[in-house]
Length: 315
Ligand code: GLN
Image (cartoon, rainbow, N blue to C red):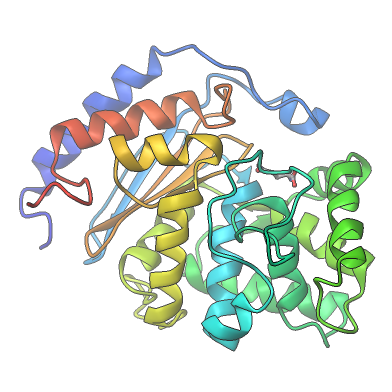
Protein backbone atom coordinates (compact mmCIF):
# COMPACT_ATOMS: atom_id res chain seq x y z
CA UNK A 1 0.00 0.00 0.00
CA UNK A 2 1.19 3.56 -0.69
CA UNK A 3 -0.06 4.49 2.79
CA UNK A 4 1.03 1.48 4.87
CA UNK A 5 -0.65 2.56 8.10
CA UNK A 6 -3.93 3.67 6.58
CA UNK A 7 -5.81 3.46 9.87
CA UNK A 8 -3.34 5.79 11.54
CA UNK A 9 -3.57 8.13 8.58
CA UNK A 10 -7.37 8.21 8.79
CA UNK A 11 -7.10 9.05 12.45
CA UNK A 12 -5.13 12.18 11.49
CA UNK A 13 -7.70 13.05 8.80
CA UNK A 14 -10.45 12.79 11.40
CA UNK A 15 -8.54 15.06 13.77
CA UNK A 16 -7.88 17.68 11.12
CA UNK A 17 -11.51 17.47 10.03
CA UNK A 18 -12.67 18.18 13.58
CA UNK A 19 -10.25 21.05 13.97
CA UNK A 20 -11.46 22.74 10.76
CA UNK A 21 -15.10 22.15 11.69
CA UNK A 22 -14.76 24.79 14.42
CA UNK A 23 -13.62 27.34 11.83
CA UNK A 24 -16.64 29.54 11.09
CA UNK A 25 -14.85 32.10 8.91
CA UNK A 26 -16.03 33.14 5.47
CA UNK A 27 -19.28 33.43 3.58
CA UNK A 28 -20.84 31.33 0.84
CA UNK A 29 -20.68 32.76 -2.69
CA UNK A 30 -23.57 35.11 -3.30
CA UNK A 31 -23.49 35.94 -7.04
CA UNK A 32 -26.33 33.46 -7.59
CA UNK A 33 -29.10 32.65 -5.08
CA UNK A 34 -28.58 28.89 -5.40
CA UNK A 35 -25.08 29.20 -3.93
CA UNK A 36 -25.92 31.96 -1.45
CA UNK A 37 -28.48 29.62 0.15
CA UNK A 38 -25.85 26.97 0.87
CA UNK A 39 -25.68 25.67 4.41
CA UNK A 40 -22.43 27.06 5.91
CA UNK A 41 -22.17 24.07 8.25
CA UNK A 42 -21.58 21.57 5.48
CA UNK A 43 -18.09 20.13 5.66
CA UNK A 44 -16.88 17.02 3.92
CA UNK A 45 -13.53 15.33 3.36
CA UNK A 46 -12.97 12.29 1.21
CA UNK A 47 -9.73 10.54 0.37
CA UNK A 48 -8.92 7.87 -2.21
CA UNK A 49 -5.40 6.50 -2.62
CA UNK A 50 -3.97 5.38 -5.95
CA UNK A 51 -4.24 1.81 -4.72
CA UNK A 52 -7.88 2.20 -3.82
CA UNK A 53 -7.96 2.76 -0.06
CA UNK A 54 -10.74 5.18 0.85
CA UNK A 55 -11.82 7.24 3.80
CA UNK A 56 -14.59 9.81 4.04
CA UNK A 57 -15.93 11.94 6.84
CA UNK A 58 -18.63 14.58 7.22
CA UNK A 59 -21.29 15.44 4.63
CA UNK A 60 -19.73 13.19 2.05
CA UNK A 61 -22.92 12.21 0.28
CA UNK A 62 -24.39 15.69 -0.15
CA UNK A 63 -24.19 16.81 -3.80
CA UNK A 64 -22.68 20.15 -4.75
CA UNK A 65 -21.77 21.74 -8.06
CA UNK A 66 -18.25 21.48 -9.44
CA UNK A 67 -18.05 25.13 -10.57
CA UNK A 68 -14.41 25.97 -11.27
CA UNK A 69 -13.27 22.49 -10.25
CA UNK A 70 -14.58 21.47 -13.69
CA UNK A 71 -11.86 23.59 -15.31
CA UNK A 72 -8.91 21.20 -14.77
CA UNK A 73 -11.07 18.19 -15.63
CA UNK A 74 -12.27 19.60 -18.95
CA UNK A 75 -8.75 20.79 -19.70
CA UNK A 76 -7.44 17.27 -19.02
CA UNK A 77 -10.06 15.79 -21.35
CA UNK A 78 -9.31 18.22 -24.16
CA UNK A 79 -5.56 17.70 -23.76
CA UNK A 80 -6.07 13.95 -23.85
CA UNK A 81 -8.22 14.11 -26.98
CA UNK A 82 -6.34 16.69 -29.06
CA UNK A 83 -2.89 16.96 -27.50
CA UNK A 84 -1.00 19.71 -25.74
CA UNK A 85 0.00 21.61 -28.88
CA UNK A 86 -3.50 22.00 -30.23
CA UNK A 87 -4.77 23.04 -26.82
CA UNK A 88 -2.12 25.69 -26.32
CA UNK A 89 -2.61 27.26 -29.72
CA UNK A 90 -5.65 28.78 -28.06
CA UNK A 91 -4.81 29.21 -24.39
CA UNK A 92 -1.65 30.07 -22.44
CA UNK A 93 -0.01 28.46 -19.42
CA UNK A 94 0.98 31.49 -17.37
CA UNK A 95 -0.64 32.57 -14.10
CA UNK A 96 -2.56 35.75 -14.84
CA UNK A 97 -2.04 37.51 -11.52
CA UNK A 98 -5.54 38.86 -12.08
CA UNK A 99 -8.99 37.96 -10.89
CA UNK A 100 -10.37 34.72 -12.31
CA UNK A 101 -12.98 36.54 -14.34
CA UNK A 102 -11.00 39.62 -15.32
CA UNK A 103 -11.52 40.98 -18.80
CA UNK A 104 -8.00 40.60 -20.13
CA UNK A 105 -5.84 38.51 -22.44
CA UNK A 106 -2.09 37.81 -22.47
CA UNK A 107 0.49 39.39 -24.80
CA UNK A 108 -0.33 36.83 -27.48
CA UNK A 109 -4.01 37.69 -27.26
CA UNK A 110 -4.84 34.38 -25.66
CA UNK A 111 -6.50 33.73 -22.32
CA UNK A 112 -3.69 33.41 -19.76
CA UNK A 113 -4.42 29.84 -18.71
CA UNK A 114 -7.26 27.28 -18.60
CA UNK A 115 -7.93 27.73 -14.86
CA UNK A 116 -9.49 31.19 -15.22
CA UNK A 117 -12.87 31.82 -16.80
CA UNK A 118 -11.64 33.07 -20.18
CA UNK A 119 -9.37 30.05 -20.54
CA UNK A 120 -12.07 27.65 -19.40
CA UNK A 121 -14.57 29.09 -21.90
CA UNK A 122 -11.89 28.51 -24.55
CA UNK A 123 -11.33 24.95 -23.33
CA UNK A 124 -15.08 24.33 -23.59
CA UNK A 125 -15.03 25.70 -27.15
CA UNK A 126 -12.36 23.16 -28.15
CA UNK A 127 -14.18 20.07 -26.89
CA UNK A 128 -16.05 18.23 -29.67
CA UNK A 129 -17.14 21.47 -31.38
CA UNK A 130 -18.86 19.61 -34.22
CA UNK A 131 -21.31 17.75 -32.04
CA UNK A 132 -24.78 19.05 -31.25
CA UNK A 133 -25.17 20.69 -27.84
CA UNK A 134 -27.00 17.60 -26.58
CA UNK A 135 -24.38 15.14 -27.81
CA UNK A 136 -21.62 17.30 -26.43
CA UNK A 137 -23.20 17.24 -23.00
CA UNK A 138 -23.70 13.47 -23.20
CA UNK A 139 -20.09 13.03 -24.19
CA UNK A 140 -18.65 15.14 -21.41
CA UNK A 141 -21.03 13.66 -18.83
CA UNK A 142 -19.84 10.20 -19.76
CA UNK A 143 -16.19 11.23 -19.54
CA UNK A 144 -16.64 12.86 -16.13
CA UNK A 145 -18.51 9.76 -15.01
CA UNK A 146 -15.50 7.64 -15.98
CA UNK A 147 -13.17 10.00 -14.08
CA UNK A 148 -15.32 9.37 -11.01
CA UNK A 149 -15.38 5.60 -11.53
CA UNK A 150 -19.12 5.54 -12.17
CA UNK A 151 -19.94 7.10 -8.82
CA UNK A 152 -22.26 10.06 -8.25
CA UNK A 153 -22.42 12.63 -11.02
CA UNK A 154 -25.43 14.89 -11.43
CA UNK A 155 -26.54 18.07 -13.11
CA UNK A 156 -28.08 20.95 -11.18
CA UNK A 157 -30.47 22.66 -13.56
CA UNK A 158 -31.33 25.50 -11.15
CA UNK A 159 -27.64 26.39 -10.86
CA UNK A 160 -27.28 26.17 -14.64
CA UNK A 161 -30.21 28.54 -15.21
CA UNK A 162 -28.90 30.90 -12.55
CA UNK A 163 -25.40 30.90 -14.02
CA UNK A 164 -26.85 31.71 -17.40
CA UNK A 165 -28.96 34.50 -15.95
CA UNK A 166 -26.10 36.15 -14.04
CA UNK A 167 -23.42 35.79 -16.64
CA UNK A 168 -22.75 39.30 -17.92
CA UNK A 169 -19.04 38.95 -17.24
CA UNK A 170 -18.75 35.55 -18.91
CA UNK A 171 -20.60 36.90 -21.95
CA UNK A 172 -18.26 39.90 -21.94
CA UNK A 173 -15.25 37.57 -21.81
CA UNK A 174 -16.54 35.49 -24.69
CA UNK A 175 -17.31 38.53 -26.87
CA UNK A 176 -13.94 40.05 -25.99
CA UNK A 177 -12.22 36.84 -27.10
CA UNK A 178 -14.28 36.72 -30.28
CA UNK A 179 -13.37 40.33 -31.02
CA UNK A 180 -9.71 39.36 -30.63
CA UNK A 181 -10.15 36.32 -32.89
CA UNK A 182 -9.18 33.91 -30.14
CA UNK A 183 -11.64 31.13 -30.98
CA UNK A 184 -11.16 28.49 -33.65
CA UNK A 185 -13.14 29.23 -36.77
CA UNK A 186 -16.76 28.18 -36.62
CA UNK A 187 -17.07 28.44 -32.82
CA UNK A 188 -20.68 29.04 -31.81
CA UNK A 189 -20.37 31.57 -29.01
CA UNK A 190 -23.69 31.15 -27.23
CA UNK A 191 -23.56 27.39 -27.43
CA UNK A 192 -20.03 27.49 -26.03
CA UNK A 193 -21.12 29.62 -23.08
CA UNK A 194 -24.06 27.33 -22.38
CA UNK A 195 -21.66 24.41 -22.43
CA UNK A 196 -19.34 26.21 -20.00
CA UNK A 197 -22.27 26.90 -17.62
CA UNK A 198 -23.29 23.25 -17.88
CA UNK A 199 -19.80 22.15 -16.90
CA UNK A 200 -19.94 24.46 -13.85
CA UNK A 201 -23.34 22.98 -12.94
CA UNK A 202 -22.29 19.34 -12.89
CA UNK A 203 -22.73 17.89 -9.44
CA UNK A 204 -20.49 15.59 -7.48
CA UNK A 205 -20.24 14.46 -3.88
CA UNK A 206 -17.02 14.60 -1.89
CA UNK A 207 -16.77 10.83 -2.40
CA UNK A 208 -17.07 10.88 -6.17
CA UNK A 209 -14.85 13.99 -6.28
CA UNK A 210 -12.10 12.17 -4.39
CA UNK A 211 -12.13 9.52 -7.09
CA UNK A 212 -11.75 12.17 -9.78
CA UNK A 213 -8.79 13.65 -7.91
CA UNK A 214 -7.38 10.15 -7.41
CA UNK A 215 -7.59 9.54 -11.17
CA UNK A 216 -5.35 12.60 -11.60
CA UNK A 217 -3.04 11.39 -8.81
CA UNK A 218 -2.80 8.05 -10.61
CA UNK A 219 -1.70 9.45 -13.99
CA UNK A 220 -5.15 9.33 -15.58
CA UNK A 221 -6.14 5.76 -14.70
CA UNK A 222 -9.07 5.49 -12.35
CA UNK A 223 -7.69 3.59 -9.34
CA UNK A 224 -10.88 1.65 -8.66
CA UNK A 225 -12.00 0.70 -12.15
CA UNK A 226 -8.59 0.66 -13.89
CA UNK A 227 -10.16 2.74 -16.67
CA UNK A 228 -7.47 4.73 -18.56
CA UNK A 229 -9.48 7.95 -18.93
CA UNK A 230 -6.65 10.45 -19.47
CA UNK A 231 -3.18 10.35 -20.98
CA UNK A 232 -0.17 10.82 -18.72
CA UNK A 233 0.84 13.94 -20.67
CA UNK A 234 -2.57 15.50 -20.18
CA UNK A 235 -2.44 14.79 -16.45
CA UNK A 236 1.05 16.22 -16.19
CA UNK A 237 -0.11 19.43 -17.87
CA UNK A 238 -3.20 19.60 -15.71
CA UNK A 239 -1.35 19.13 -12.43
CA UNK A 240 1.21 21.73 -13.45
CA UNK A 241 -1.50 24.31 -14.10
CA UNK A 242 -3.38 23.39 -10.94
CA UNK A 243 -0.13 23.90 -9.06
CA UNK A 244 0.51 27.37 -10.48
CA UNK A 245 -3.04 28.66 -11.07
CA UNK A 246 -5.55 26.50 -9.18
CA UNK A 247 -6.38 28.62 -6.14
CA UNK A 248 -7.25 32.01 -7.65
CA UNK A 249 -5.05 34.84 -6.38
CA UNK A 250 -3.84 32.65 -3.57
CA UNK A 251 -2.18 30.19 -5.99
CA UNK A 252 1.37 31.38 -5.36
CA UNK A 253 0.97 31.32 -1.61
CA UNK A 254 -0.74 27.94 -1.76
CA UNK A 255 2.12 26.53 -3.87
CA UNK A 256 4.54 27.93 -1.30
CA UNK A 257 2.78 26.74 1.82
CA UNK A 258 1.06 23.54 0.69
CA UNK A 259 3.00 22.67 -2.46
CA UNK A 260 0.35 20.45 -4.03
CA UNK A 261 -1.73 20.78 -7.21
CA UNK A 262 -5.28 21.76 -6.35
CA UNK A 263 -8.30 23.54 -7.77
CA UNK A 264 -11.06 25.30 -5.96
CA UNK A 265 -14.53 26.37 -7.03
CA UNK A 266 -17.09 28.88 -5.75
CA UNK A 267 -19.33 26.16 -4.35
CA UNK A 268 -16.62 25.66 -1.72
CA UNK A 269 -15.03 22.56 -3.19
CA UNK A 270 -11.33 21.85 -3.55
CA UNK A 271 -9.79 18.99 -5.51
CA UNK A 272 -6.38 18.26 -4.00
CA UNK A 273 -3.90 15.87 -5.60
CA UNK A 274 -0.95 14.19 -3.97
CA UNK A 275 0.71 12.80 -7.12
CA UNK A 276 1.26 9.04 -7.09
CA UNK A 277 -0.34 8.85 -3.68
CA UNK A 278 -3.95 10.03 -3.39
CA UNK A 279 -6.76 12.31 -4.44
CA UNK A 280 -8.68 14.33 -1.88
CA UNK A 281 -11.95 16.20 -2.26
CA UNK A 282 -12.82 18.86 0.30
CA UNK A 283 -16.10 20.73 0.45
CA UNK A 284 -17.43 23.48 2.68
CA UNK A 285 -19.36 26.49 1.28
CA UNK A 286 -17.95 29.47 3.26
CA UNK A 287 -15.26 31.18 1.18
CA UNK A 288 -12.40 33.51 2.13
CA UNK A 289 -11.69 36.80 0.35
CA UNK A 290 -9.78 34.94 -2.38
CA UNK A 291 -12.78 32.73 -3.11
CA UNK A 292 -11.32 29.57 -1.58
CA UNK A 293 -13.17 27.48 0.99
CA UNK A 294 -11.92 28.53 4.44
CA UNK A 295 -12.12 25.05 5.94
CA UNK A 296 -10.56 23.43 2.88
CA UNK A 297 -7.54 25.74 2.87
CA UNK A 298 -7.03 25.22 6.58
CA UNK A 299 -7.26 21.46 6.04
CA UNK A 300 -4.55 21.55 3.35
CA UNK A 301 -2.18 23.52 5.59
CA UNK A 302 -2.73 21.18 8.48
CA UNK A 303 -2.30 18.09 6.30
CA UNK A 304 1.06 19.27 5.02
CA UNK A 305 2.24 20.20 8.52
CA UNK A 306 1.66 16.59 9.59
CA UNK A 307 2.81 14.72 6.45
CA UNK A 308 5.62 15.32 3.97
CA UNK A 309 3.31 15.87 1.01
CA UNK A 310 4.72 19.23 -0.09
CA UNK A 311 6.25 18.94 -3.55
CA UNK A 312 9.65 19.83 -2.14
CA UNK A 313 9.48 18.03 1.18
CA UNK A 314 11.69 15.17 0.03
CA UNK A 315 14.95 17.06 -0.43
N1 GLN B 1 -19.76 29.68 -12.56
C1 GLN B 1 -18.73 30.53 -12.06
C2 GLN B 1 -18.35 31.58 -13.09
O1 GLN B 1 -18.13 31.23 -14.22
C3 GLN B 1 -17.58 29.67 -11.70
C4 GLN B 1 -16.47 30.45 -11.16
C5 GLN B 1 -15.74 29.80 -10.07
O2 GLN B 1 -16.00 28.73 -9.52
N2 GLN B 1 -14.76 30.54 -9.67
O3 GLN B 1 -18.31 32.75 -12.78
